[in-house]
Image (cartoon, rainbow, N blue to C red; front, top):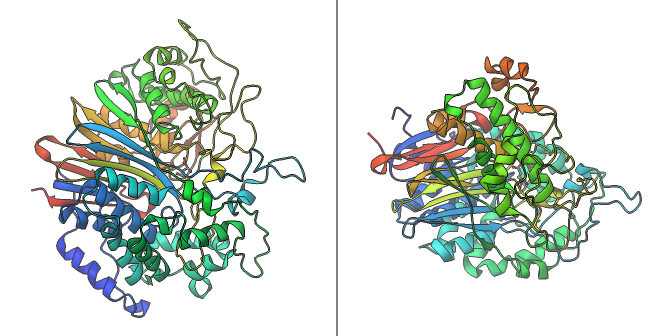
Length: 599
Ligand code: GLU
């Protein structure tokens, strides 16, 4: 494999030196080692958003930890170095391949709606209409009961070797000593300055002296270090019922607005009892077989596994590898146009709505959807959902549905250990910067995950599966995925990006399996995301491809959506070789590393 090697011990020493300088003036801080997007080798691998989080995972693997141990270390460190997309205030979905039993399992760590909320929580009683989306984002109302810490604990109970306290230590150190601010972090903070500035503890933490920390300076978070230390001492009860939880609940009930911010955020009804009641759920993965590859993903409350799976099943009716590139991309776009209509109509929290998962993932249903694809013409969105309950149905449909939104923020990382266990974990606080509200004295931001509900019905006369309800989990698009081939690991992959997550994961699978790209090329390739909308979101590099004119001639239309997704993947090559692949340039480039670099 001709790929760049990464993260040598010299680099690690450089990072240690930087951390030691944490309290020195910013001007004397040395930059972090450059993040390297691709690594190959043996013995274990990590791909995550930041150099420090990847290194935390590699260190745990080197000490003999499992992929689950390393995943907790990575996630906790992302809470420090990638705080606008990760951390204790959020939730996520954890997919695990257990090498000993050769099985894939999943944990649903999605945030839940407090018991005191209602189905009209996002309807303004003064007008009877939904609140403006941004009003809902920056509020206590949008904060779901966080599932992150419960997920870490559950993963360690099932597959860990070390304690939670051990696995939090690397993150605690980075929070205490600091990390060197990257240009990406500086620009994210600048972009969030208004939102963060609305809340005093967020402004104090992230806008010291009133502005974003400069690239090259050192960012410390002693409050978060102390929070991690308290959890190390007291266990997750400190959060799910103890004093950290009490502070969290107070913050949701009375968001700490900065003087002069000029906003009166909606409050949330979360109680300590909501935290006590929270459980990360053991769920069965979704599964489809695509051209001989067994693709496992997240079942609802995420729509990711079903929608990726249905799209693959639709594409399984065509031979993409022998099509010209325009036709292959046309079919890719049409498959998700159709699958998103079904997602929007049928998928929600299965504890609240009856999700026809088996039908949506059946080959026979996919065949009825595949026959809707016209190779000479793009579909006209919104296309109608299919009827997964119909039998022997030809090309039946239900009345039309609406499009879905494009959010941009979250993170995905992958880990594998020397035993061959694998973690594919997407975690989030929803929007970049979540609700914008930091829990005072605790060093972490709160999610705004409940804005993933539809505020009002979207499905015309049909029921909407994603309306709010007490205790319900909002529908997600997160699609952490593990693929086996002939019973052996082939690929682990995922991405952030709101509803574009689904198309990004699908496009990477199609690029790798059908179009013959290497995993790094499949990840780096320009992206387009069709989600049953009149126009397809596309990256500038996709628009510049010669194939785009051919797609437009078929009636596809595109709009520049900027960058889409930030993928992380590992491919399992013959003889134990690992190919770890992140992003060369999206989100400023991400960090891949292996335990023992190849030769
Ligand atoms: N909240 C989104 C979801 O669960 C993820 C946010 C994002 O990736 O932008 O689908």
